[in-house]
Image (cartoon, rainbow, N blue to C red):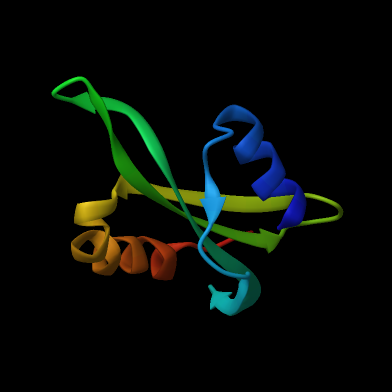
Length: 94
């Protein structure tokens, strides 16, 4: 998770973690989830809007890491959370 967060921050240095990674389960497999806050490239009245990103990572085959990134404006993220959770529940790594 640390490397994934670092890679995401490399592309958007303004992102910051809102807490520590949390242990979760995705498709019956151990996974980690972490949320980050930052500024979007989308602007309203010339100002970037706040965005929230939820990263979910799990071990794939061998050294492969599978991950999902859920991104929404911070103001809308909580209303999108049930949709993001349904997507996660439908995930099946093979």
